[in-house]
Length: 149
Ligand SMILES: Nc1ncnc2c1ncn2[C@@H]1O[C@H](COP(=O)(O)OP(=O)(O)OP(=O)(O)O)[C@@H](O)[C@H]1O
Ligand SMILES: [Mg+2]
Image (cartoon, rainbow, N blue to C red; front, side, top):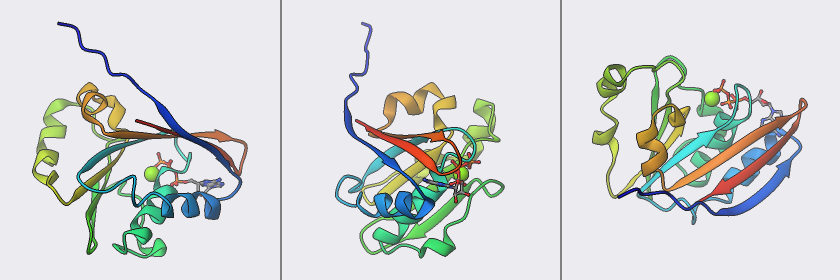
C-alpha cells in the first residue's frame, strides 16, 4: 500500500532580523511539547540555528548565547526541566553508515525534542517527522518562515 503524508501549513510569517526569529522560536514551547522530531529546513545561513536559540531559551535549556551550530560535533544536547533538546546538524553526514554511528534513535524518548538541520537528506526523517519548520532567505535580513505539520 502506498502511504503519503498529508501536510498542512499551520503558520507562516516573515521576520526581519535574527532577534525576531529568536523571538518566534520562543513562542513554540506548546507546539514542541515532547516527544517531537522536528526538521529544520533551509539553505546555509537561512536561520535554522538562530531559531534553535529561541527554542532552547524558551525551554530554559540553554541561553541564546550558549546555542551554537553543531557543525563539527553534529549533536548538541541541552537539558531543560521540561524537555531534553537535541540540536543535530546532518550537513556533513552523507551515508546511512555515517548516520548509524550517530545512533539518533537512542536519543528519542518521552522527554526528547530532536531539532534536525539537513535531516531531509534522509527520507526516513521526512516520513517520521512530527513537524517541519522551513526558512527561506530573502536578502540579508528577511526570512520567510513556514511551519508544517
Ligand atoms: N531574519 C533573520 N532570521 C534569522 N537569522 C537572520 C535573520 N536576518 C539575518 N540573520 C543572520 O543570518 C544568519 C543565520 O545563520 P544560522 O547559523 O542561523 O543559519 P543556518 O540555517 O543554521 O545555517 P547552516 O545550514 O549553515 O547551519 C545569522 O548570521 C543571523 O544573524
Ligand atoms: Mg545551522
